Length: 103
Image (tube, rainbow, N blue to C red; front, top):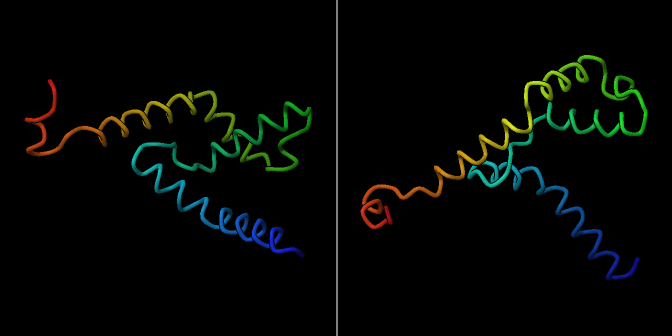
């Protein structure tokens, strides 16, 4: 293994280890949606159906049912609206800074 291959492998390992905590931190300030298991299952279900495969074989019937219910209730749109609201509240001036903000 060359030094370049070793560096690339280490970078990939570090990125994989930090992906979850970084995503949660970015979601906490409203810049991304929360990592939801049902959203992941909905994406996986949609992908498997686009390949004309049965998602219940891979995920199980309860997970597929929950993902379908989440999608029909407007899952992604609801997440996006909540993310926008959180981002707007995060950017709002606080305390004495409100006097300085343009009205």
